[in-house]
Every structure is written in structure tokens, then in C-alpha cells.
Length: 307
Image (cartoon, rainbow, N blue to C red; front, side, top):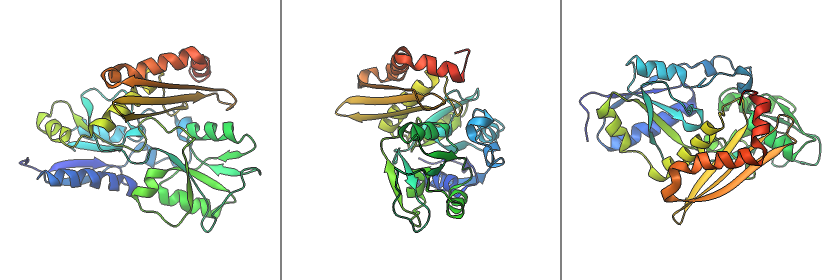
């Protein structure tokens, strides 16, 4: 498979985003596709102080790349799938997902620290409302502080302040091979829908690029994150609503877990379901209906009164 001109890969400028773009680039090179990487600044990279859930902007890390795609300045946009809105801009579609890495979050300790006493009062850093509420639900005597910025910025701040730890997506540390800080996998904390997967967004009116991108799609990962994203969409979720989801496929069945917590972290509504692979397209919506019936609707209405 070849292309007559290089495929222009759009990406954010952070080290992690560039790594993700290079992963897509390498897969395309294996197909004989020439590429070039084009770096674009997004709104989410400009304001690094405000917690994401307070900014209330859908697609804060993707809008600038969407515009570049629609203006034909790039041919594809590479994102962390968890940052891609469930409803994309008109004319765009998510056409490839790479094989998923670790979906879990992890607790990172300050440099030279290797343990934490969870029974004591602790200060933990994160800008994610989902992480904050799941943490406080488990450790109500802990305090959460806002932590924004790229991986290096957040690690530097963690070492400068008197905090006991900070929550990161583990796949980010693994991709960048960061070994300067000790971290522990938080496999009890359900991740953001589609966390750990790299997605490729294309223009729908570009059939040649669509075909190329489909050739690097990892089918099982796409199935799982589609269920998670459908669950999120059915609940009208986003950065301002703390919805978590995780789907896996094993022995021709899809296993799904999801949850949502109240703003005071005292109420937690969960759902666990399994589906035959023939019902994957309905799984996310069915799981959303189940969690709403179990009390999730009342929780969501505290975030979105018109829900």
C-alpha cells in the first residue's frame, strides 16, 4: 500500500502526544506510507491552571486539530482516545484505534519515595473529577489538589510541593519510559472511557486516507472502546461528569464495568454486565440504561439538571 503524497499527521506538541503520533507514523511506514508530523497547539495546552472539569469545554484537546482537518491542513489527527468527544465535528470520524495499552490509572509518589501510609491524612494531586471522586470515596480523609500540565510538568510539581502523591494514566508513564518515580497501579479505580488507546480521526470525504487508516485498526480494542464511548454518550458524559468505564473481551464475551459518583463522593452507582460479541453494538447503551435504573440518573441530574 502506497500513497502519492505524504500523509500529514496532526498532533499536539507535548512529548506524550508526539510519541503517540510516532506510533501511528511507524505503523503507516510499515505499509509503505510516507508521512510528516505537524504540531498544533490546542486550547487545553494554553490554560494549564484551571481544572478540566471547570473549563466545561467539549473536545478541549481536539478542537484545534479538528479545525486543521476540516481546513485540509492535515490529513489525520492522532489523539488519546479518552480525549475524543463521543460526538465528533461534522465531516470527521474515528477510523482507527491502535491496540490498547494499560487502561489503568496509577498513584505516582514524589521522587525518592517508595511507599505511602494511606491511613494518615494525605494530599493527592489530580485535575480529573473522575479520579478525584473515586479516590475520596475510598479515602475520605484525604485531600485532593489540582494538578495540570504535561507529564514532566506534573512530575516536577509533585517533587516541589508537600503532597504524598499524584494520579496519572499509567500508560503515559509506560510510553515515555519514566523510571524516576515509583508508582502503583490503581486497578480498583475504573478508568476514563477509552483510556490507554490511541485513536486516528480522519475526514469522511477522504476515502483513500480512510482506507489506509482502517488497515492499522485493532479490531478488539475498537470494539471495547466503542462500548465505553457509547456508554459515555448515552449518559451525556464528559469532563464535567465523572463517568468511568472499562470493557474487555475474553472467550467470545465482552465484560463491562462502569460507575458514576456524586460530587461529594459519598454516592457511587456501579454496573457490571457481560455480552455476547454479537450484541457489542448495543452493549454500551444497555449498560447505561442499567446504571440509570440503579440510581445513576439521580446522580447525573446533580451535574446536568436537564438530564
